[in-house]
Image (cartoon, rainbow, N blue to C red):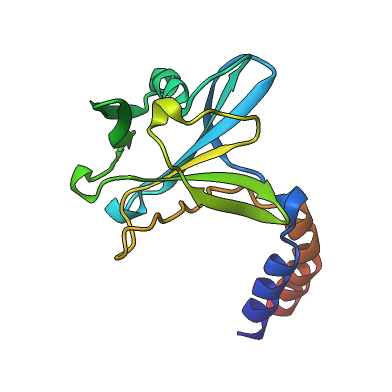
Length: 175
């Protein structure tokens, strides 16, 4: 048990801005700017997926989601009056529940982690900027505020390097 406690403390101590690396499922596009879409299917007992989209000039979240359909991302949407809203997403075996609706958060990576705020417009009116995370969670809080997605991250090399002596010592004791 002590080993597990030390392991957890070291993992959290090693997280920093430089260590936040998305586990990208697929990438599309080309250009000098890159934004990310993260879809969290945990409400329907599936994992979260991260996608990268590159472009030049101006682009919207809707442009990114339409382009990501070439990766196998299912993106269902409806134009309501003057705005476009996402109805549901699917990817591989993961599928959202349209009756939960999808909460859309915008994230930026600063100060060691993502800072989230609720998207305030339709996806066609939400401009992309380089480094932006368009985060989607299948559901809302009880007060209808957005729930930011869990990010699929690649473990930081620093974390693994710091754990190596502990893992080696534990292995020696088990012999």
